[in-house]
Figure 1: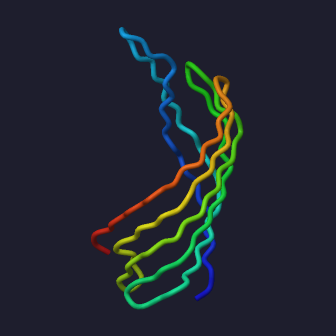
Figure 2: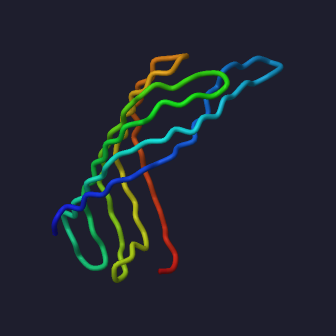
Length: 125
């Protein structure tokens, strides 16, 4: 099986806790567009299941809200996945991997690494 390369455009919604007191909570919400690519490669295929690896990298564009601004950033990650396919449609997919993001804001310098467990189920064709 040959590797699959796909480009993507994403639009993430992020909440930023600006202040917290006994009387009020101030939260900013910002939408962050990104542009990137994913490379997937199936390692083992036993119909209807496939086990493989996936890597992705993206550029996160700057944006702003009332309380703060995000600057140009980047993210990358990798995962092992298991998916069940029926004909050419994925019915079920789960993955375990990591995600690294670097993006400074006008409030803080941000570098985060997350371990992610993802499960998606698709019904129908």
